[in-house]
Image (tube, rainbow, N blue to C red; front, side, top):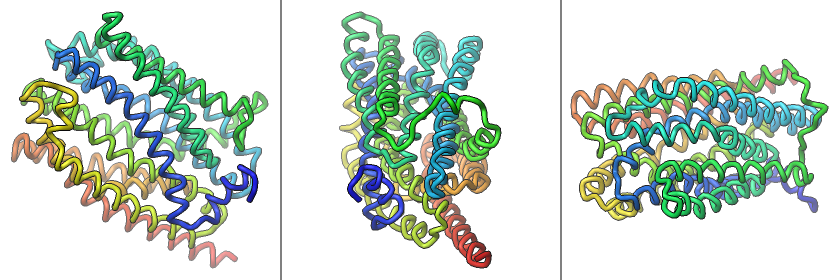
Length: 454
């Protein structure tokens, strides 16, 4: 295993399960931590403006970013799943056709979202929950995000496509470059050029543009196992159909999360617009913990897809057990840090005593999801890797529509603000048992079916 290509395939096919999960997941988590700085950096520098309504506006605008990510996730997850399975089945031409198709679909989707978003911008801002004090700030921020949407989506999708072939390190370089640019440009645009919240949005767009360019450079400089090619630009109905078949449930997860986020914000507004600002800060800090389980789940996805393509079910079960053990241990450590230092962490982003007090309460409540949500995310990602979207979709529907939104409304009605912030932990506890049971059952069933066909 001397070449880089061989090492990447070895990690997918033969490496010890715990080592494989760590090798694929840790670099990705590092990259995701860097990626989350996009939002944290914006929040930090906007907080220095001493205007809590600007902080609330950034939180209200967040679902727009999530919608863009949802479409990127649809294409990226669907294409990545097919690429990993093609590599496992040793079909490199089809893998490269899928890669090219994924990039093309991302470009088309980003243009459509930008056009529709600009046309319906006033209606969108109202739906996001913006009120008198936050409307103008939210509108400014959302408009700029929409204009630069092609770069946001491109950066996200290309990272997924690079990971699908085991090029995890390459996938995080674009994130690092983009975040570094954002850190430098945020204070420049916000304060030096006196552009305020608009400057923060512009810095984010430029950072994503740089990340997209760097990821494309790896492909065109032939550093990757696979490369996009003009000969594959002709649409292939079978490949497009498979991308959407697997990718749509993945995008629905993000879209439904975005919808739940909007419902949550609209309920929170009734407790005051500063409550929205506090919840936004707490959720962004929680995102650091979220990226641990998302990183391990995303890192495990190509391993599961490759071995499903190779019909190595024993390895799939070993990787799954290792992944759940690793992610649960890591999240318990993060939860302890959040519980001890919650007020201090919130105070990094605001001087408002009220916002700090509310934010600490929120963070200590929502952090309770961390020991449970990793197993759910890993199960959903595994179903997508196996090309079984109906199971991933089932988990999504139960989680968001069957549990979270009803619990959000019910607990808020019964217990007020305390119920509102406890709905998510209750949801994730239930979903951990449901999703893991479903995945183990499915893998065992596939193993028996394959054995009977031999």
